[in-house]
Length: 286
Image (cartoon, rainbow, N blue to C red; front, side):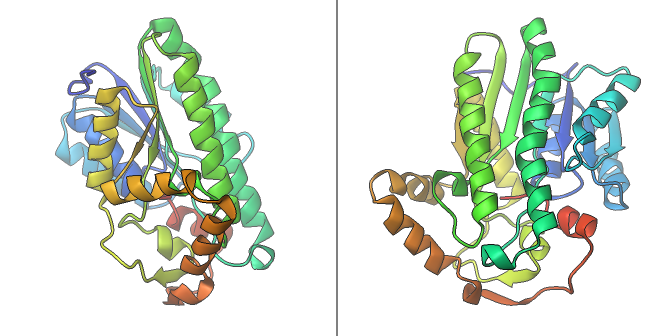
């Protein structure tokens, strides 16, 4: 078991950290002694999140507003971190959002942002900060995947495929760099009590209790203690994530299509918003 109770003297960079799982993870590292840098789209939620963390913990908290769905977003974030003179010991790639519905009906620009944020930004952020961790023989990298990474996800096809990329990419890095002093893990939450479904534009009938961000954080630290390549939040979701291994992929996809059919979504939650607002409301993804 790896000791993950004390991160004093380290600095954690958490993206998508203005609310939900991202903010809870920043809080988790701050409670264990780490200074934190929270990054998210520049709006009023970001300074409020930073102020909340400062009230709770005697650590240094920096806030950086950035749009990581832009091609140069990760490099801009890294440049700002360098301007602050910070060394990043812990990187949490959490920023994300999703769309729900029939693929051809969904917003093409938002689909592009999904791929840029969930795939390209995760890869680029990892490339920017992982080499320094390897040079120092110490570090932690957590990439947010999802239980949906383990199967095809009809009506959220791009989101599910992107989370599968994150899981595969992160597991490969875990295998490549074992024994190098850097913990690498994909965190796979399920339906969590965040504003993710609001970001989809609907309220949803979940069919069960939502997990809480704090429960997801507890799962993350248990996974880090085990040195696991990935951690799935919730025992029932560990079962469902492994079910596709024993059933035909087509059958699993058909079952999932029925579960996630647009008719299962309840009334519209709020009117349509601009791209930046929709993306921010949808983070963090689960």
